[in-house]
Image 1: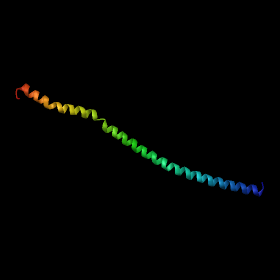
Image 2 (image 1 turned 60 degrees about the vertical axis):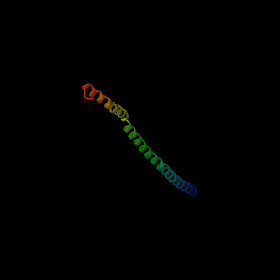
Image 3 (image 1 turned 90 degrees about the vertical axis):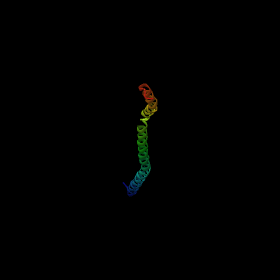
Image 4 (image 1 turned 90 degrees about the horizontal axis):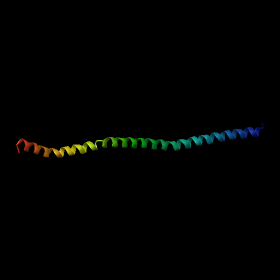
Length: 85
């Protein structure tokens, strides 16, 4: 090997190292927002599941309202049957 070939090999290695460092820096620059988006999407999913869990009781709420509105009529009927009204 000649001295020129050795120098070119070292220059190529140095250039390759610089390119590898730039690629790693760019990768980290891209991954930071990706990881942030992943955290935000996890928070959104958790909030959505919480909302769905809190809305599960709507059917029971409607049944409770129906029963509560029926109580006065039932009470009047009971009192009439008992002869108190």
